[in-house]
Length: 260
Image 1 (cartoon, one colour):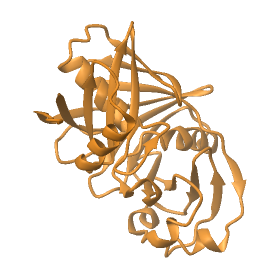
Image 2 (cartoon, one colour):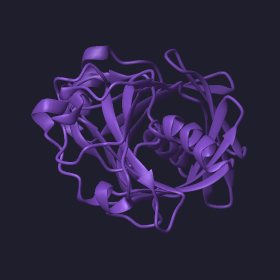
Image 3 (cartoon, rainbow, N blue to C red):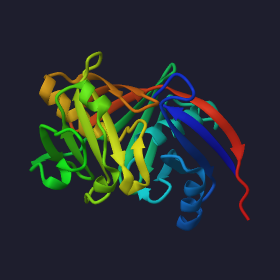
Image 4 (cartoon, one colour):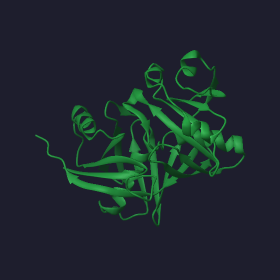
């Protein structure tokens, strides 16, 4: 079976967030898909099956299946637009865990349309404070993640996570964010619970970040940088209870998997 590796939210290979994409004619067993994702050892491996005019999609980290993944959805759309003969400028994915998700193509720019997250403020517990070397100003809880607010971009860039402590938190992962110097906001994402200590670029985290920063900055169109070592660049827009997350992608690898 065919496999692609795509770098998402970047214009250049070796940056952004790599995702594997596996087109399927029918679903493999959960066990086999998890083993493929573990073997790939990337933040995400996406599998899809065409069903009528939609594409059913699922996402796996090296250790678990997840409810939503932005960069692997962007990567899958890139594969469909460039290599798997999808001729329209819009793709509708369907996830049993997240509903309909659309990706539109305008020249080389791909735009995800995802539902927004919901946030509620929470206390800065010792468990949260012990997870980083710098104290956040505020903490919030979304559907699956914590969002921690810091003072400056420099704090985000220099933040030293305690992964053993983060692993004990009862969430998918932790988003650290602050206002940006050359963008509206910056972030990093830590998810040892999902088998990824630090995710290079996390599209799904921006379903949390966009509504937060849109309210804080009183604007609906925002620019974002994820300050991982590989870095990622995202154009963002709040659309009521949905968000638009846009970026570029590049193909790194096309190959074949051999399954016994």
